[in-house]
Image 1 (cartoon, rainbow, N blue to C red):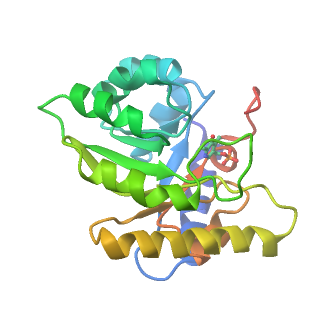
Image 2: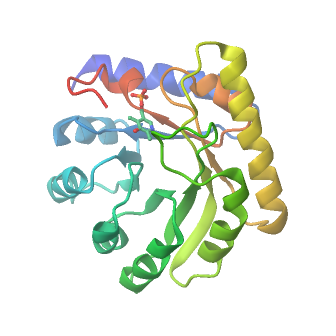
Length: 226
Ligand SMILES: *Cc1c(COP(=O)(O)O)cnc(C)c1O
């Protein structure tokens, strides 16, 4: 076991706790490009939620780590032809961005599993390169998820533009916070605002993130950039 990983894990958890008041934000460890052995090590230290971007890469790790009680989150774009695998194997889908995926996801969610937890992805800075709905499209898509069998609407997820200044990043997080609060007014059960990554998770927590997705700050820089 790498003691460097342990040091980073302890440090990140302390920073998450210090950035918020009350219940600390949930840490999703982003393990894309990391070998299953690294996931096993971190799980052994007490981390339970892991985020993966690619379905095939995730399925291979799940098979190797079947003996670990891991909560798997898909945080990369979902192609329609992967709905079945996601419904069968993941615990959370953080990147729902279109209504036509809802039917296949609900249909393929196994009856013996808890409902699939779903976050609607919001393209908060209106970037061509990013998936996600516009703020205006959010209410209808969220309502469709909430009305679907075997899916559980939990909230929203976003990857804001990596703005150069903290003020600009804070403004994106703040707009997401407002959107989340507005959505919660109509869906009182939602509890998850997933925003913030290695470079800005503390700022995200200061603006109301309840879940942060951290990869390189935990595992070190990725060899294969994403
Ligand atoms: C890769 C990735 C992360 C983690 O990024 P780091 O900067 O390594 O923390 C978080 N969220 C999504 C959607 C990602 O693709």
